[in-house]
Image (cartoon, rainbow over all chains, first blue to last red):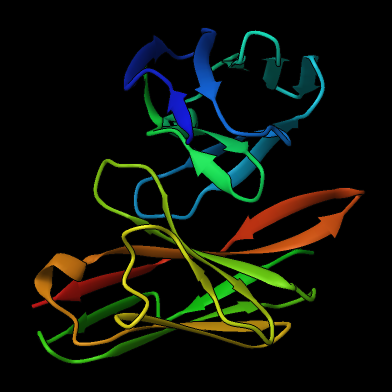
Length: 108
Length: 117
């Protein structure tokens, strides 16, 4: 089965940095994805990790450790528009399984 | 590129009626499409995997006779919620898989908000 855990909520100040952790236990591993989802909208792709290490893409970075079953998404220089739900998803043997999502609230 | 559309974006129907939701990949061919359901403040739950020209594979607990999936072409999959009831009210999202830049990636449609009265 699949078990993906991430915190429910996080709050941070505009301009700050927030790190969202994700731990997983899955049958098979073929990559880990991070998606951003605003309320009432579909998820949008942020990052993909299949090898250990850090992937940087602008203000967003994602890290993966396969041996620890652990990933994090780092959001830098937070902006108000970054307030959203962030979903950690793991591709197992044949499907993508999602965590429950972390709601990030950015305050002025 | 890699745009997925869904129609309708919102639908309100009476209990007992059937609702069809279309999912289209606009600028690429998708051999595999996925249907998800998302309840408020919960994550996406995979309902079924749809392959062009073959029967859909349903996840455990999803009734295949209630949620009919047809994947008639490489760019279109449909989900029909039959005899809808209020508990079927949810956000339904499709995604289409393609192999861009060497990796399989899912692109999500904008979702369909279904409300059953």
